[in-house]
Length: 384
Image 1 (cartoon, helix red, strand yellow):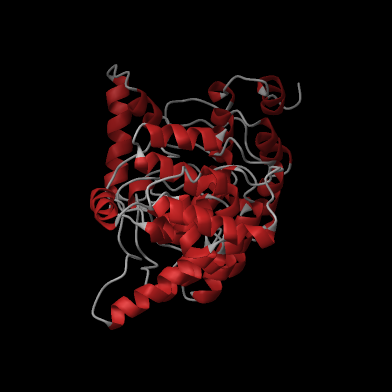
Image 2 (cartoon, rainbow, N blue to C red; image 1 turned 60 degrees about the vertical axis):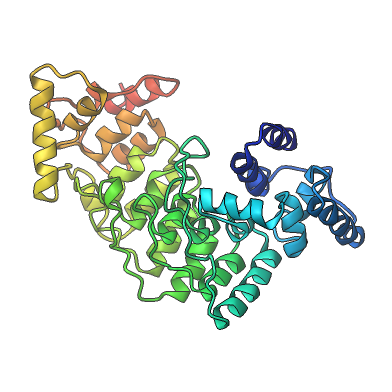
């Protein structure tokens, strides 16, 4: 199905879109059984043949998608996989998008291709040329997995999708470890996708990393916040960060949100992550901490939102922000409708079910409906 989509995008002339899906096929297929396991002894010969066809402008290349993804085949296979064309055409494409083969091979976790490109880059650098490890995406395509935005670098896509050897190769090439895309540095990218393996190796390479760096474009979120807030199965990533030195008692955003606020906001969070956080020294004391602005700009934003809503404003964003002041972790869990998290916060963390936010709402008043609504209501009513 993915191959069909890739071929369809190519037929429409949507080169960038086709390469996104080609690059991310290993990630999209992770954990799934495949019937396309080739004979390893024959794979290289087939790759070489198709590569020659690709250079000549023939062949779709879709036959080798599964055989060159995830580190197999090297640079020749990468060119075939991404249907690399003549130098002039690809130079124009790179000028338009800002990225080239290194970017796509990094997203594809093609270790061999990245290492070969790293060698070429070293030669170019010695000869006075430059490499593309710090060249950033020039397009804004939020419709493509929500991450293909301006300023995205090869190191970012490797942090999201690739194994450590690719990340390390890019760093050795001189990739900037503090480069930002939408306020996120590469470690924050790893945390967002729960890449505990890459997080551990990154922190070993950068033992003095500043875990308090904030993503200004995401309410001042820290790397620990990024690990907790998004997606399921984040326990290992959070453990890796805490082990490396991230402070679980630090306020993780500009609205004074704690680790418990963040885990309660994540609709995909599970009770095991909540229990782990509650067991960390000092975290249980944060159970009823209310949200408030950490700095003057955010204090002003929260106040203005409440005033506009009070005067009758109905915009969704204003309505949302107007609720934030004095929200406790339990209130956030009620808003996300996560009964499992609410149960742990109340029964094991001792969260107060009667507290109210600035607009006078309790957790019960904020409860979101859904399949967990009945269980969540029972928790908030003390088991009634």
